[in-house]
Length: 484
Image (cartoon, rainbow, N blue to C red; front, side, top):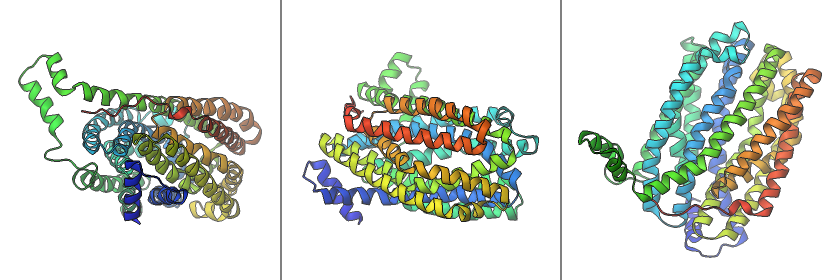
């Protein structure tokens, strides 16, 4: 199957025609390893929650309290990576592999530097964060410790995400998919040893996940730099750092050093990376801020509601798997089609991935409705938590079709470098529709009111994204193909 994928990608890049069946085959060949990777990530969350859930509802609530904030920092890592990975997809589509390699090399250093700043920020707020989120006294210490450990692993998480995104953008989805499975297996082993054998509880869950991520990230960065046909680095890929140190040692003027390090092509590369990433940063900050606001709204409902909300979000994640897998495929296919100057091909891939992803998510939503009690029962032993979580999952099942549309359509837009308007759509839908309805419904229906608000918002957002894709303005980008 890998050979078929490489052959079809080669024809896409060279401008050769692809039949509808060949396009669909290429879509599935790119999507299935990404879906497998998403499954592994979802299983990691599920495993963490199930293992910690055996310790008690308070421990589960501690992780649930800070989970929205960990999403914020993790999403910043994804946004940092997108600024470079989208350009890598365009370069590969144009068969400019030298440019793709330079983008990868510079992207490693830029994203790592930003992640170090994010880690310092996260460490500085780890004690105060659970208090800000309205956590009850019995969960404050565990919540703070979990977030601190997560913060310390952020630079390694960034390298993992960047390497994975770059490989997927180049058309290699098999290796990231396999590594995601390996990471899941390592997570089970590390979690069991640290949570139960070492008796570290919540801290063990954070350490286990961090160590599993670090192992997978180390392999991915070495594979991409040494073995990827599109991204491998010749000679020392520490060259930019050495040039910087050389400039400092020789005491060159600031202007001359800047000219040496950042010629015109490099400036274009960084400008484009910033142009792609900053709307994602803003969206992440404000939309994830909305998740934190939702956590603050849910926290006063008590430990049972916090735990049920956290477990239901994890359980619902299984419905997202094909959506996010298709999103990765859409970003790669649209990006490489536009890089090859084939906008009509990009449009066909957009609708094909959107329809397939939405159909798959709808099928899983039906299964989630039927088996909600069994799924929640695997995560918690508390009958109240299970009963409340089942109600939430069955509310959300109604929104999965249109949610699938929004997920994959967003990937299409990112592949085209169109991030500003999609980010604005996400921001407005979260703050205006979801939180606005939540303020009205939570006092009347409790946690179920929040999930009704969320299902409504996801459905409306799906319709808006479908309209944007149909109008076609998302493909009108100004990305160039020049790179240092």
